[in-house]
Each structure stands twice: as structure tokens, then as C-alpha cells.
Image (tube, rainbow, N blue to C red; front, side):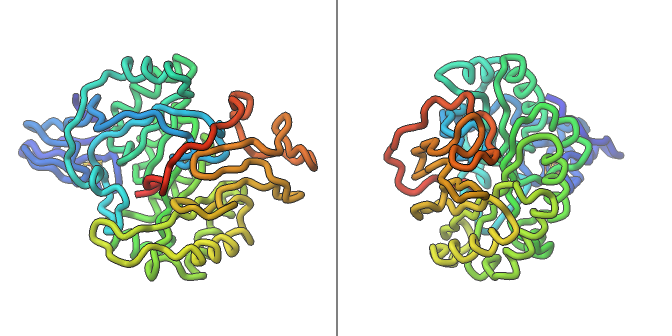
Length: 347
Ligand code: SF4
């Protein structure tokens, strides 16, 4: 399929305009994301309708904690990513080309209508480089009354983002650091693009943010103070997930110590209302407590979810709004399941 958002140049070259890399691609070549190629002067969306996998996941695995807690969602994703993070937690699928299946947008939406899924999560790798398929699949999912969820690095230009956002109900966006040089040198990305995406997405749909905490790279007090302070300036109610890093890909630093996660959580809570620690098993680290009375609203352990103290969308103890949507579709909580360490919630 021909890609959107590009321009044709001399000698059959093209320039992709989907993300800030603005790749110049010669005939026969492909962009940094590896899924957009130039065939004879036309930019093709190579991964259209070609997911690497599809599975029913807990919504908490995205992670989304304030959106339909306890729900199950059909999750899928393509090859490719437009970042190249040295610490990528999913590099086996984001930085290599895996075998794909073929599926139409209609087939995917029909699949998501079955088995109790609330919709489709575009995840695992980087869904934004699946842009053309996202537009089609998200529209058909909405036609069926399903929700669309993006788990993304937020690296997209404003114009395509504006076209996509009306079709999206919730996003988890990685904010890897507030340091522009870290984004450039370690991730091959652009911090300001991500910040702009978070602001635009927050104005359009439900947003939660994930920060992968890497020892020696972004785990200083000043790092979390800066990140939490910026996010609070957008909205202090945006949930922040501090995710434990494990050595992967080209980064060998040891896994994040749990005390580091707890320290950063405490600092972030000085500015933000909801801060979680994930990709590890810290009791209470993923619970939601009422910011007014401290009562337990939602208990989580692994992917077991229990609505503990919410009635009609409010804290059953003090009556404050619970800041969680989709509770009316909550089906009594998900029972415990054996999960071990949660799969990477963040690339
Ligand atoms: S979407 Fe891919 S091809 Fe297009 S500019 Fe970004 S990295 Fe390059």
C-alpha cells in the first residue's frame, strides 16, 4: 500500500514525513523504522496488515491502570520501530524482522469483538510506524463499539498525529528521559516530539506515561524531579508508571534496584497524584489509593485486579472521584494468574 505523509523528490527519491526523522529514501531503500520503503519513487507502507503477533492481554499489561481496569484487550503489533534505544526491553521484536501474518483491518476488528475483549491495543513494537493500518483498523474498531489503545514511544509529527487521535481512546506513552541528549544519543530520537505528543494526546484521550528507570542513566533525583514536574504541568492526574529496567540489547547495566524505584516513586508523588512501580513485584507498588483519604481503590498484584473501594466511580470511603474510566464494564475483577515477572511494559 502507498504510504501517507511523504513527498516525492528528484531522481525517484522520497522523503517520509511521518516522524521527525524525515528519512530521505533512495529507490530500493527503506527508512530508519525498516517498514517504509521506496519502490520506484513511491513510498510504501510495507507492514500494512502484517502483524507479528496477536494475543489477548490484560489491559494492565500495557500498562493502563485508569482505563477499564480488569479488562482484556486484543493486542497486536507490526515489525519495526523508529527509535533504536540501546536498552530496548523488546529488541528481539522491535529491532529485527520477524515473520508476519496477514490480517485485514476488518478481520482484526471482528477478532477483537470476540472473547470479551474491549477493543484493540496496538503495542509490542512501535504502532505509529503502522500508521496507515492504524487508521483503517481503528475506524473499524470504533464502528463496532470497541476501544483503541496505543502503546507508543510518541515519535510522530503533529499532522499525522492530529489525524490519528480522534480514533484513539487511550495511550500509554513512553517518556524515557527529560534529557534531550539522552533521547538523541541513546534512543536515536527527539525529546521535544515526545513531549508535544503527550500534550496533544492528553487533550484528546486518556493518557498514562511510562518511564523506564535505568541505573546510572536516568535514575537521579533531578531526573525524576524534572520529569514529574513537567508532567504535572500538563496534568498532575496523569498516571506515571516507573518501570524496572533489566539488562537487554546493548546495555549491560544491572537491573534497577527496587529501593531506587521506591525512592523515585516517593519523589514523583510530591508532584503527581498517581505513581506506580512496575515490571517487578513490589507489594502495593501497583495499587491505586485515594489521593484524598488514602483508602485502597484498586488492588493489583501481577495481573490480578480487584476493585476494592470504588462505588459509582467514587471512593467508597470519602466520596472523591476515582479518576478511573470504564468501571461500568468491569466484570468483577480478574483472578490471580501465574505471571512471574511481567513482560516488558516499555521498550
Ligand atoms: S516513519 Fe520511518 S521512514 Fe518515516 S521518517 Fe520515521 S523512521 Fe523514517
